[in-house]
Amino acid sequence: MATLKEIAYDLINHVRPSYSDDDDLDIRQVYYWIKNQRALWIYKKLGEHKPISEKWLQEYASLTLYEDGTEKYSDTIATPILYRGEAKLTYVGPTTRTSKKWLLLPYESAKYHGSGRFNSTVVVCYYMNNKIYTRSYTGSTCMVRGVFEDPMDVTGFTVDTEYPIDEHMLEFLKSEIIKADMSIFIQSKNDEVNDERNNLN
Image (tube, rainbow, N blue to C red):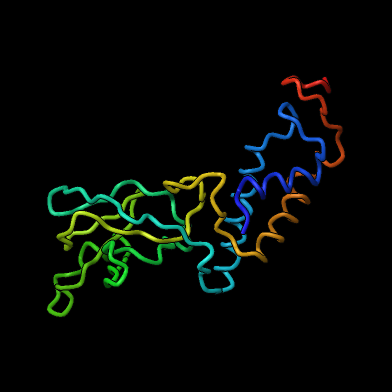
């Protein structure tokens, strides 16, 4: 699969074969369009009740847990895709992959869970304000895996990292960006002189 940088330059080459560093078309803007179209596609698939693709997932292999009274909370994570109020996190739990994952609940449900006769041993957690909270876990680290709005916000992700998107989704994404976001650049001239100035003005 392609990296974010490769996807962006592939798109730019459609409209700017002679792209230069001072072109009106900024690669950071292209990164933004890619992020937005990916999120829109994922929301569309979730609305069609499609399962979460493994290709969409990113992971925090080890987050530190801090104590705050009766609760523990994690390091800050990127904003997950929120669909109908539910954070699309597919795994929250111990850093050992063979361990049983925690029960991820909405805050209102999580704060009352664990007091019953049959659920007192279940590790419950909830997501709030880009952190994971839990009360019944004794360890000092946790793992989080899920679908995040902006892959670039996930620790360790760079423009040279494989982009979390399906192969067939990528072609749709490119098509939508060219049609909806880059159409104005397709019809405009570009600055072909690589001198760090805009020579179109």
